[in-house]
Image (tube, rainbow, N blue to C red; front, top):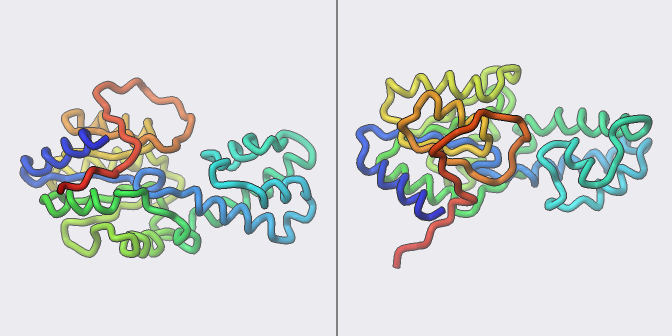
Length: 243
């Protein structure tokens, strides 16, 4: 991990007008705490009265048991989601979760990965233009996203720092990110991109095959993607401090 991150820093220092793209959810930020709080709120609400078994298990849910999706979490807990009351419980939880997860009101529960803010700060101080490129919805999530970046010490409030968000949730993330990536050519040289979703990374690599593309191996969907070569892989952003 440290070797890959040092290589990105070297490229930033050598490039003219370097640009670094960074995803947010499950790349710079852990979102499991957000999901856990929403699921617990469902279990504490009256809507869960009809589903005592699901309510009990969700109240006992640990962060480590959370899956990528509500469906995965139900499977981890051994809860039926295919028929009868189990299906109704799943639909109730999914609806409750979806209405809140994609909202600024719950973003304060997100937790920056250790070392992430320090690493991005070092890139910015080395001369990189920072673009936070996220599939979060512009209307519902910008205020909370900006507040978290400031709270957690990420570079913000400078002309060379931008936050690009989806104008509408109906646009697939990979399509949005590849379209936005095309606009970077007028701003500088893309040095590196950081993503936890392989299919998004594949699209960015297609547009910029000459850049470093780093897979942040945290959690991701099981969506199939084309085979990519020459990708880099890290599991975190912590780097040894210089003595």
